[in-house]
Image (cartoon, rainbow, N blue to C red; front, side, top):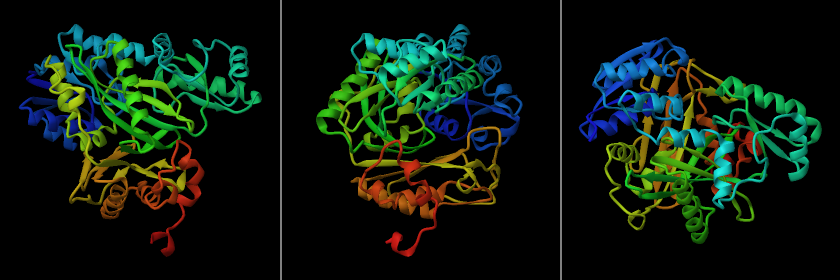
Length: 458
């Protein structure tokens, strides 16, 4: 078993990892930037080391500084969390080069799935359905036009590297192609350091369904069920729930087997997520595999009782998975809302600042993952997510009602948040009826941002 783990991240995921390590009697070392000096996660760790300035490039993306901090503090492993360097193959390789255990898949697997074009090719070779599109990277605008004409508009131009909705442009008509192509390449280069893009058919208003994977070093691979992550804004997930109510038992079984097969052909190890889109005919397509812990992993933990971060650490220690696929059980329904420090009334502009007052929800079936506290300063340098509220109920309806209560009890003063938007979604007739897809927010944004009237609150 690992003895000391360096947490190469910040905020709530760093806190989440530290909690798991402490329960396993594993010491932790936190690294932090100058902007995070004195942050909660630094005080929870056994030791904290400053590795650079406020900008991520000076600290949380500084591979050499992080590895040297791990060696200097005599750690035997690094947990990258999500974001930052979590899906960086060169960072995983650097850690291994210095004799450190990287708590995640091997560098070769990260590299394969880090390039979505290569990942799509691997899936096609193994008869796993992918969205129709280009066979490889698109080298020119003329080639993009030709592929789009072949598969039909609308299409998406997508960055081969990275994620988080960056480097993606929707093209509805040929006259939009030139500008979209160059914009996607420019954003891909700016965000991921590589400008390669590919093209795929846009499946209109699909559901975004994903399966949580665990794979040990002994070759056992299983899934922990599915999540519906369809409620998104600008391709950024906002609300996630498990299980996905749109799946029949037969379709769920088939998709789960496909997800496990995707991990098998990639020789996957550790925790990962296989992501699909599901159209209104019941056809599904592989879109990507995230080679890290997901932001939304708590909803799976809530209905399975399995601590995914703990299992990541056990797998990295060389231990086998403690259960088989038949022993994975599911109980109830869980939902997660991401609380972001942003102003919905001003185009969702980030809202950094000082939190003057904070009250978080509690009670039966409620979990809050956060590193926020009263007096906390929301930094302008990092992602705007400041908390995740997760609730569980016996049914989806019960879960929605519990989430309403949880959001009502949440008070954050000093910065703007998206709490009101999330609360309004919980009263949306379409959301309550589970009539959701990836276009739900865009279609309903004006209504969701309007004040709630008495009749809508009933």
